[in-house]
Length: 387
Picture (tube, rainbow, N blue to C red):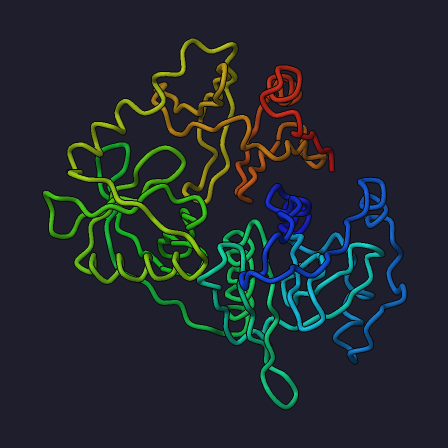
């Protein structure tokens, strides 16, 4: 499943809050009402090559050559201009982004990611920001408001970063070591990007921690080079001689998209390790468990795992029944049944991350997860997709 398809319609694209104030205390300009759900569904069936409202050269023709499904994320925003305030859809693609009128789904403007020269947050508005864009004669600004500002900017930075990498940008990072759940250390690199921190080893990306999902960033009190990143309910423990520089860069990058990272107090390496030992053990007895194999870039071969379905959590265990990860059912976006393999399935989460497994009773596993999500009302919007 392509990244574009898997991220289409993700939860972060819910409607933005209406613009009740323009920050100046004056009368707010009228906004355009969004179409109903049926009109939105019709967007999926629009034929390529339809008419475009704006005639901006081959910029706008981008939509005619790129089906709507190829946008990796879409956000409902308020455009703020000298003419007033207008509701728009900001659609992000791997090389470009565009604004769409939600009344008729016509493209109003489109830009290449290379035209994005800067992003500035509005300090007086928690939803406001401005995109600085390279124009033919001078730079222009696109002022927007979005309820999910941090997620939107995280996606925009990520796409621009990936596009620059495809065009030969060199990778940089900090050498560090990571403490693992097996009580050993792993030498790795931490690359501090504008959307998150990427943990890599030669040839593979092991993990990525998005600022929008980061729970805390904490310097250890019993170590000069130790720090912890809180993510998905547990802390990741790192050691690096560049701790101060890593800390400053993470804080600055998170603030640039409107995320304020918290820090825990009086945290030691021993405390983090002790918390890891008890992680996921308070979820009660499972309803059912399934033996599966996990496909992950961290290992060359599929790893034996147990998926344990509890009242509120999906818990992943290793072959020794030690907890690897816990997932809230509410965080599951879609269950994917791969047609190319009778055993393979994927769990796509709302933050865009994916987990891939193999199971002899694949349909039984998917049915059980779907039943808890939908029938038990833990996540009624979860969907089951057979590609």
